[in-house]
Length: 224
Image 1: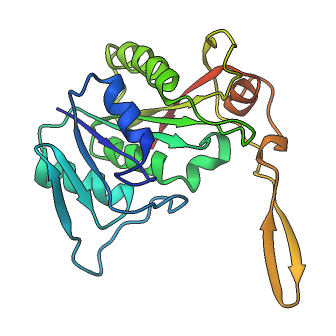
Image 2 (image 1 turned 135 degrees about the vertical axis):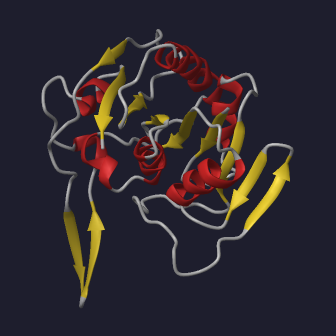
């Protein structure tokens, strides 16, 4: 069994693109509403409502990590892989510490279940091509799921946002970037308002940030 989740919510187009990449052969256990940027937060102080949306589709009133926990222990205990995404926005380098998308598969790795997080860098000047993203993802997950994976490790993939007429990108195995995200604040009275240009972030040469922002698919293996 393969379980799909995300942090954009069960109704997001990215998770449908991910399901399409798997030819529909997966269950969905995803948050009811958007949970972007929640990191590895889990819910232990209140009941978690789970609503069935189809034969193998469940909306969870919780975080992505909650979804993985409930999927692995309650709904689909025979799960072999948890795939998270396709996230609308990059999750590379230091992003993995705040990303709910990545936390979902990190939680799977903690349970010794294979995990792949897939995110799609966003250039705000043009729309996503989810059909193309699904095609790339199908190639990637087919290749990665055919390989043995070290217990406690998982894959983090970032797709580039290319011009519609661009050739398909290379798939590059690389290391995670160690540079911080852009951190800037605009002062408005006694409030500090965050601002930062994601595409202008610093990058280690050859790292996932460098690879993805240069127009290629960045593939990183991470460990808990």
